[in-house]
Amino acid sequence: MRRRSTALCDHAAMPNLRFLPLALLASSAFALVWGGHVLLQLHGPPVAASSATLSEHEMEQINAMAPQDQVTRLLERTINHHKGAADEIAKRTDGWTGKIHSTADLQTMTNTAYFSDDLRVRAAALEIWLAEYNLRKNSATVDELIRDAAAGGDRKYFLLSNLGILGNRGVEPEKVFDALALYVHDPDPATRAAAINGLGLLGTESTIAVLLDVFRNDTSLDLRERAACNLADSGMLSRELRQKAVPELIRFSQDPALEGSTRKWVFQALREITLQNLGNDPVRWLSWYGAQTNRR
Image (tube, rainbow, N blue to C red):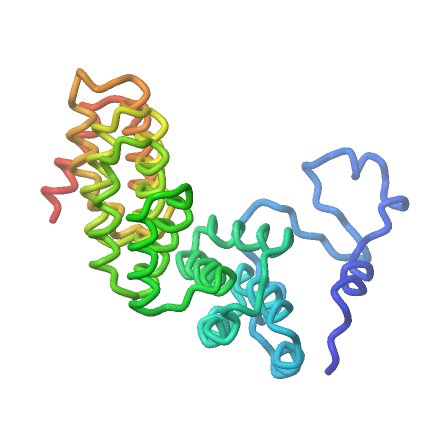
């Protein structure tokens, strides 16, 4: 069956609010009643609207599209968790490399995907960025980026960030980590920022200790916050790996000499990683962690 266009579907689904009672429109306590049905309120768990699967008909459409349009359609479907969409991106990125370009719409969508709470959706954004920047997923590209970064210049953020992406996508992750770690203590704050971003994008267990060290010891408040964000929420660490930072964060919280903003970020990171709301009381956090350890 041929699907109607998105615009048509949206138009057909819109109730005519002019004919609803004013009292009903004015009160958020009531569900909208239209055509004898109670329309969903916005609170509550997700409610499926469709099968969320790429249909055969849609796949035919996608296959007939130019690469730029394929990217846009499949990324939109991936963000909305359509089954098979992320797999299609993984299959097609090598063929897209060098054939797609940045647009305002694509930039918005890749940013949305990268800040998703689903790590697979974030990974889709990384794959598309590599294709957009014409970076092949191989050892030669890693070596080229390492050489270019060592040569200096003002492209460190681009180079080190994409090194992290390549490592995350399985290309020489250990070599990538070693290269990024070299720049974590660089005298130039912009270079350190690039290394922190690259480590967050790499997202391997080895990055945790380095990010913790930056968080605790870097001279820049901004960079300490960047490291905290990559430990707690940003970047490509899984929730399971983020948990490995908790013992050291608990130790940080016990240090009375810790700078005020850094102390605040320690507790914020602990809350985001553990989903526990224990305030900014180091004693409560230590007690909670001890109880968790005793249960294992």
